[in-house]
Image 1 (cartoon, rainbow, N blue to C red):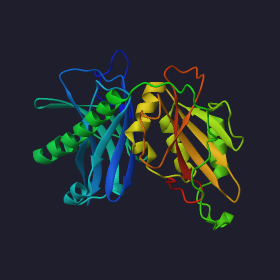
Image 2 (image 1 turned 180 degrees about the vertical axis):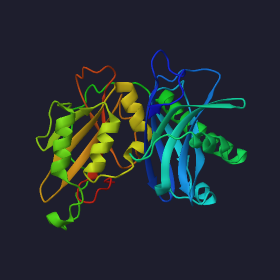
Image 3 (image 1 turned 90 degrees about the horizontal axis):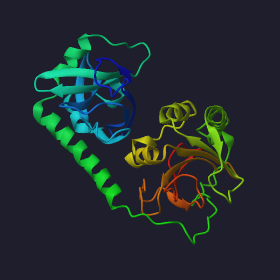
Image 4 (image 1 turned 120 degrees about the vertical axis):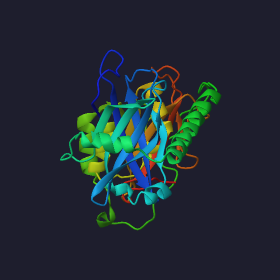
Amino acid sequence: MEELDGGFGMGTSPEAFVRLDSWEGRIVASLHVKGLKQGPFRYMLYLIFSQGDGLVSIPAGDVSASFPSMQGSLEIDPGTLKSYNTRPELVKYAAITAESKDKMWIPLFASFEKSLKWDESLRQIIHKKAPKKQAEKVSDAARKGQEKTRSEQDKSEEHGPAGQSEPDPKPGRKESATGGAGLIKCDIDKLETLIKNNFEASQPFKRGNPDYTWYQVNDLAKLSNIMYMSGINVPVFANPKILVGLFRYKHILAGLYKGENFSNFFVIGIPARDENDNRPFETACRWVPVTGSDTRDLGGYWLVYVSLRSGEIVV
């Protein structure tokens, strides 16, 4: 996102990255915010959609400046989109607003198409807002989601991985035996080249499996673009637990697993203190501990597997 109205940064210009994912008619925003100062403002994320021949802005939820670098649970449900006669694929812009009484500023703004630029008429569209009841409903849902994330973090207990031997981190399930390169949905060669050229190779597991190659990632925007260009479109970064892992440990893992019979997987490793901490999914992940890590309080990674044949998360 780009800075629009100045004066809202802590010493330097604020920064933000927003990723949108959509499934079952809803749209979910994953938001990274850095350097947005606290003050007598209410920060909100608005998404602007095409609506017939015009545009309409819909609030996705509150943005917390006191919880920097990650935001989750920013969502617009199918019913709301339908009431505005628009759809997820018609989203054009995103804006973070700062509101105080009857005044509104726009510290950060982004367009989702290169040909779309800022126009002052957009300010009036955002000013129109959603009906008050709907705005309160959306922001209340977002607030509850953020409180749940914080509560889960507070409850997590710190346990060491002492006494645990590092397991062989293979996928828990194999894909169906239906083979053939023609069925592969994702471009593994392109994915491997782009990851290798953009991120630093890593060896997070001391007794690593040679079928894996690992890279340390600290730029989700870049990784998200690489995944998209390679044909991986799963909404994995909509999960706030992944953002929590990145915020705490300043990195996540991106890996490739090359098995037999086209059993190839893209793997994301979310760092955590222990197997009771920051689990991103109930069933679609597995815990692999690490020993002797140089990263403080890092006990292991939750591994999430994405099939490079189907492009879907393996459950």
